[in-house]
Image 1 (cartoon, rainbow, N blue to C red):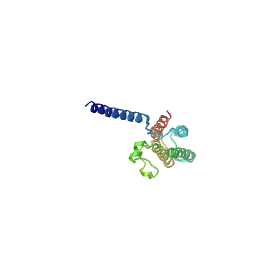
Image 2: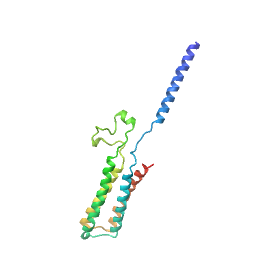
Image 3: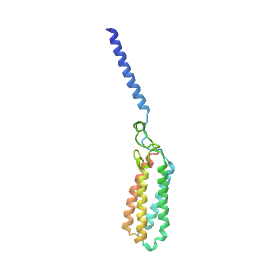
Image 4: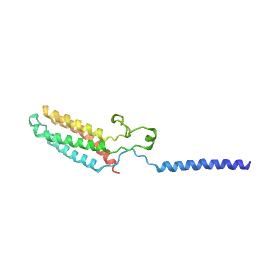
Length: 174
């Protein structure tokens, strides 16, 4: 009878040690849910933001479509800068947690672009919104000019988006 009791303790110790080992192993694992910080992306956003705010200041009093040709290159340059940063963001590797690999979900080398949705950093989508805002602003300016009220509306939309992008990218810097 005594021998049976010691076997139960041994089995209990094994379970306890196995549980402890699993806890230690899991604690040592880090789950990465965000991509690595990229100084080039943040600097590109900061530079494009500064130039865009200068442009908003230049047209804040309103402009006519007759003077649009003077501003067209500025619009195209800003749109191109944001698109270049967007492409840079898309080329940044996205982490894939071990559990996602084990379950076969998320981004993999064989994934089609339309299947890539899990753990996608928001910056690229936000920059598409910025580009759309500036494109609509450019086209409105070319067709009808801009009133101070329209400029303010475009600026608010832009500021909401750029704030989100800068906040996310700066948070990666930790």
